[in-house]
Image (cartoon, rainbow, N blue to C red; front, side):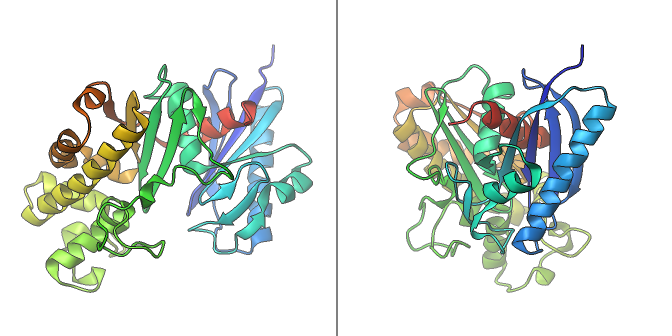
Length: 322
């Protein structure tokens, strides 16, 4: 008998991943395509719709039955109830944009829209590192810092879907500037862009071209992976930078542990590859600032699902609509 499936789509700044996900959370088929995030708002609607349709065609050829629901995970603050995107860091054309309405018009299907970090949290909760847990904090450390919060088995959206912007809690009131316009946000220290800012401040340079080649990728841009590799080889500035980042991460985690009393904190994203380098400084702050009984009950782990996290979580959101 042919299997029904759920469509989960995860849109990043560069790529879109679209998957057919089983009712139990297994990824049956996954495809990747361009995000085309620099196009007009309606261009992005057309692109997302084309990739959903392409996944349906591929699923049909693979012998799957029908898509029973569609979940779309996108970056930026949004209203999960109306499907309006308030703003998105990688899609400048989305400003108070009714994404869900336009997608439903094109696809002629009901669509569930979720924040990408919330989707990742749901994926880890359903099938990943946090499986079996009811109270979970998730942080995604990438170009920016996203957050997802699950309390008593439910994702926390807040009044309009903007809850758990955990990357924008203040860890240093007069600190580094953040892309959100504030100063001292967690994102300004532990994201890839934050690490780059710390390095430039430490080396007293303005541009990335002035950084050591070991810290850059093939295009000459800052690379968190390059910095991680340099630290593992004993580079003192790279080691120091991760210690600083770890300290601020620990300050934030202590607040999350004291406030939410989670069973687990899950850390994902590209910068999470350096979690081992940040952990000593991170745990010093956690142990110094959080209640020891709460710390003893909390595991701090790396995300388990990798590139599948967002699509699995989007699928979960689609069949467990708020």
